[in-house]
Length: 475
Image 1 (cartoon, helix red, strand yellow):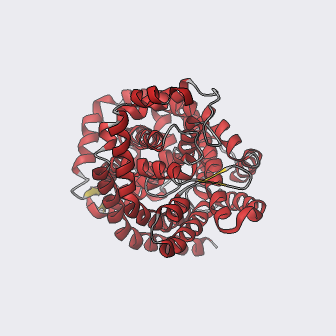
Image 2: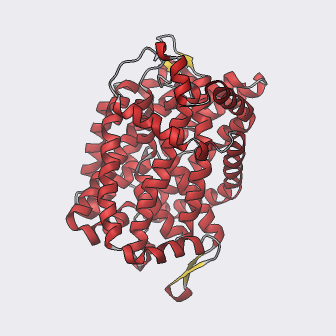
Image 3: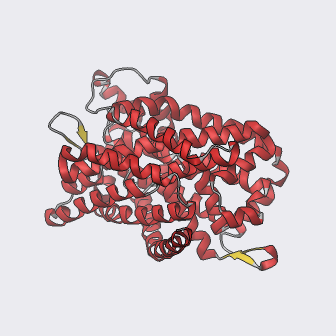
């Protein structure tokens, strides 16, 4: 059985490599194009993005009379819950051991251009959302394809295509199987807890929350997400400062080997530039999901002041996820040097590698931080991605499939917790690719609407304060 799974992992990896050789070009092209169309929104309005986010954090729990199922901050928290997952802990470590230090540079590139992509997705998600018969919000790429395309025949094909690919990615991809896999792995490697025990506990805890729908998911996410990110950064800062003397060398490795091959073991093992680029973008999409089409499903449910406001939430989301959390993980793993060991390179242990790097400098506190972070990151990602998949299934089949889908989702998460890490990551890469393709097509087609909506907003209101003054009665 083990030989079969190893062969399957190699085949899936080859498939993912071939798909991503083409897809990463379109992912980068979409990000650059949307950066231009939005007039560099991720740079010009980054301050506005964090202003909106912190305002939501300070006023969470305050009731507002706006269309939507959850507050704008809860929608952001749900989206962050689904993006700030074990991809930020294990995925970055996996990028290092499969793509070398240069992969981190390309992960950053993916993040910076991805901010404009996520801005566009969140804006379109709010602009073209619908209502279910029970009054709840329905939104995401399938709806902005359906309602935003002028070519309705093409939309009738592409919208269901996204929903099908989205449901597949949810069940088999990075939001479900990979998260459960990394959660059980880190508890097993750091504390000796059998994977089957962790798998059962995770399954039960996920089941409790997802039954409550988006409101319960949002309520859990807005409480857990800020705490888990703060804890990870505090302990991570201590680890980085413990190795501050090697940071110049770390940055040299990242920037140098983004454009030149990296050799290990006297040249016996190495990473090509193409591999670094691929792994950087593959892990970048895994962590920030910009272009994937998942986050606009959560953002669409927000009680947003405007599509532009929620779009700026998307900018903050990617910055926190990739530029902050992923960078901490990368710097920690590179500064300790454990990623270069034969054991780490051979086993490709993902989250366990990051846990070992934390433990090297912070001892048991480091181990507990990564284990707790892996659990909380993975848990919130599991519940956030369940909502995404449920919305995709409802678009295709309606409410009839909710119970069946829930059972399948939980069952596959349990299986993912117990199988090979390589196989789980590679399946996730393929699933992500197929989900991203219809969404990227939609973003290119609807980029004019994104540009026009943004331009009209800033022309009319000038600033966020200008918007608030004109709409103070409705806020």
